Length: 299
Image (tube, rainbow, N blue to C red; front, side, top):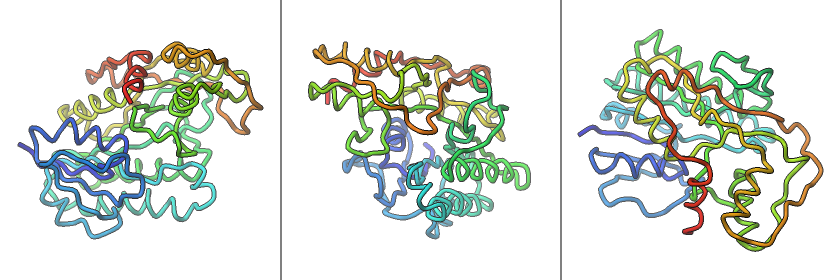
């Protein structure tokens, strides 16, 4: 049994990580309750209401594995408040890394973002693709990555960075203006409203189920080859926004139609990951998009 510290363990991804790991491990959650997706956690999980900028030294030193999902995740807020974004995503991450420097961790898993790439110059996007973030959020996530990789090189800390593309799960909050297009479509179609698509709907995205993300985390913890590396976390399959909307309409069987709106300024046209590197590690995404979306029907 290992002691696993999960930052942001009440959030969308963190909560699924808690579900996966708590049965066979001692799981401790650090969360400041700023973007909680659920209040109830398994009875054997300790939840500490703390911020990642607090003194976490003792917690980190007593852990075997640290999975760092806590972050300021709003691109829009990062544009309005770059300092707030940096304090959370850069200084918060650096605070954890510094606590881990003298600890005996087996793995430090850092959640980055595909936002580090900015506007793709070629697709599919490999990990070596130019990294030119378009927002303070993307820049702060990239900075956290660079610190993680440096701590591996300079101090021997076993860090691994993963760059998720478009994660989805029923624990996304559709009322949140920053939530993903999937939860927005689900909410509207469930209520017999037309799903709204900005532009022609031929934009492509790489949607990955949170369950596949959790599989990848398990993999990078187990594999020594993951240390000091960065991996795209995606399916490698592109889906147009129109295709996504039609899948959602079919799932609910509603008599609604796609409503096209003016394109959003700065919207990236095509984004799909090359997951060859993750595949070499043994990663195999298992959840097909339609299958993953069926989980939303049970809400």
